[in-house]
Length: 407
Ligand SMILES: [Zn+2]
Image (cartoon, rainbow, N blue to C red; front, side):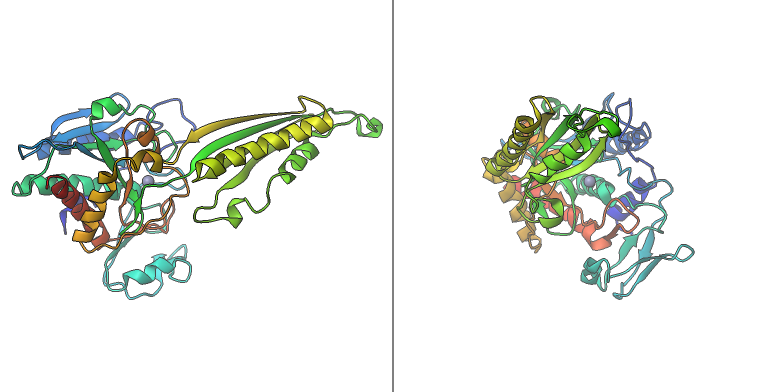
């Protein structure tokens, strides 16, 4: 078995599911089990400045093996797995020489990974796939990335003839619950730029993500006994619905893709007296993002005009921004990744991320960080799988980027 597969299997055995509601950081302390293992393995490999800090971040340095002033490049992956599905007792299955038919993940529970529902499978006829047994997620998101980075460091150490500058490695907790870089010390990491290995199929190369905001709407109604309500009652539920009706119908997630942004109502909780509504607002384009926020402000103003000031209170908070603005001023970052893909015969797939990554926040914290593929598919659930060759390709890309940056 190749080293990267070996590592991958070792890391997915450790349950690192993060938690949305938590009083600790990391959100689940079991993530530290993997952090400690990685720290030990990095030390064993011979990396320097190996640290595991109080928040669970693991960092290490592979020193340059060439006398030349070069940028410091970082490689990052996250240790936690999604709380959407258990990551305890992951029991991987190997499907060798996949023939394109249904894969029975779990006979007893009748769980089938079928190319009818998951057409990407068809791309991997003849390949070896690693799947789940239907009871857990696989954890390729993002332990594939960790295994790739670790194996790439081992490869560079084993091959001193490959010249490279200083490399920093970082493993982060709590990405899946949106807190992956809350305590990330960019200065201590000390890289000029970095790449996350957290993408999907081979070839993915992402440097654009949404601009994102959350909108909280509180509607203050006026509850009166319904039998005596005429000309007195203000029904907060109905006013919330009216507010929602003022937003463009076709700017909803179910009607948008590619570069189209949206408003998404995801929570409504209310009574006649008071109703709370929450939305997320997303758009890749800064101006369209601003326009979507302005539309909500206008709708709130209209409602207040109609029913009296302070009927609704709207609060919009920005969450993260499109990393493109931070990555594009440094064309060498994308150029190195592209050159590595090209040298390895990998066709780049640019898809704007319809979400955010740790990299989007890091990019605004001073560390421009686009996202590379890991090769995994259908993350966060029992249908997650990864082809073995894809795991290996990820290693090649890291090694090649390091090599090309030193040229
Ligand atoms: Zn991930």
